[in-house]
Length: 476
Ligand SMILES: Cc1cc2nc3c(=O)[nH]c(=O)nc-3n(C[C@H](O)[C@H](O)[C@H](O)COP(=O)(O)OP(=O)(O)OC[C@H]3O[C@@H](n4cnc5c(N)ncnc54)[C@H](O)[C@@H]3O)c2cc1C
Image 1 (cartoon, helix red, strand yellow):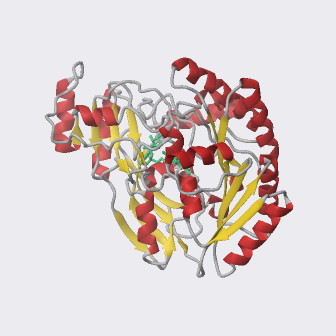
Image 2 (cartoon, protein in one colour):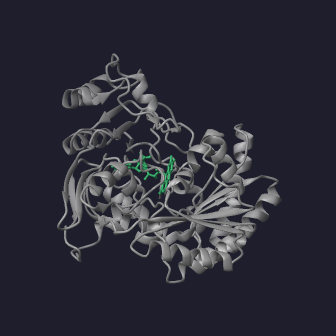
Image 3 (tube, rainbow, N blue to C red):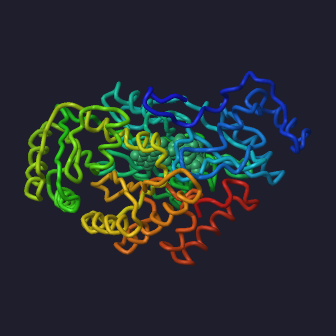
């Protein structure tokens, strides 16, 4: 899948659908024949489709080629595939668009991949109830565009919205640029259709605003990273677009700690932005080298954000005042979206430079200045440059360690990430604000969660997937 000429996301499955299909050597041919008889050309074994699922967008190493890919077009396809894998003890990975940054969708060698990419129908936009019913493979930005036609929008706004799927967003409990105002994905999921590891189909939640019936299974599956079930459809909440011309604002700082203090003051005050992001000077340099847009270079860091509603200009002006009071060297308010577009390019720009060793730690917003100071100290201690972009209003940071592409360089960069993660935890933060654990952060889990909490999660996993076939060894 080519991304807008500006970057690339992992290849789509089905790229080689017309190529001759042949079972992988070592697979049990009769077993696969059973599945092929049930799924027909939705079972892919051509090399291009297998290779496309061996990686996601993270730095996780491929584990080998899967046996086959199920390009599901219905809930029944997913159910058939899971019942087949369950009966044979075959490991299954689940895949939306493969934009994940934690290794959760990477195929298992000799495993089965279930791809939701072709289940991409928007089933209904229920304007009166501000709900949308979608299949799991709907692209996030497509839902947002469909909602916009009714004066509504889908609040979560990951920077990957042009490529990621709603199912992937739910499975990772994705965040994004608008979360400072509207919360994360779990805040907008009303109901789910899920296929369990043994192939049984289950529905959770309700279409009502309030629902206290039974355990909150919708929340349990949200953020479960493909380990508890395959999400095939969802009912999600939409919000109305506010009247008035949105404004974007920029504030440049010569000291990144001042920028952190400004964010804390903005978020604790009455002037509420819809977006509040930070891009440090090094990231601005990398983004401009990737896609020049005339983004002015700050001394240390810039805050960029957006305000909406009839008072958008006044709100942006109040935020600019706060920034100046906290040391901003320069502020700007405009009608253009280009500042936010530049922010959305941060990940593709870093990836184009081979910079993939990053994380998504979170800290309470009042700790932002302290965490920025600590990251500077860690960079100096390791003798490495660290580029930082952040969903600053959420206290959610993406530091990326500059390192070469050899295994030794990667290993050295991982040690830097470990130190940043411990720093975030020392400030009452979290090891993952939005990307999930997958395989790349699994070693960090016990740093944040106690043994009992880990036991409880593994017990839930064992109850729902006793054979351990669904995304085993990842997330929990
Ligand atoms: C350029 C770029 C920018 C990004 N910006 C953001 C951002 O701002 N905020 C953010 O939160 N993330 C961001 N990400 C990470 C990524 O886009 C999100 O994690 C996204 O939610 C993944 O969606 P996907 O469809 O690509 O899922 P995949 O990568 O295919 O899968 C991700 C995980 O979800 C599971 N999964 C996928 N679909 C299902 C399903 N239907 N049922 C059960 N499990 C499933 C997979 O097994 C895997 O564990 C970014 C990534 C890139 C490349």
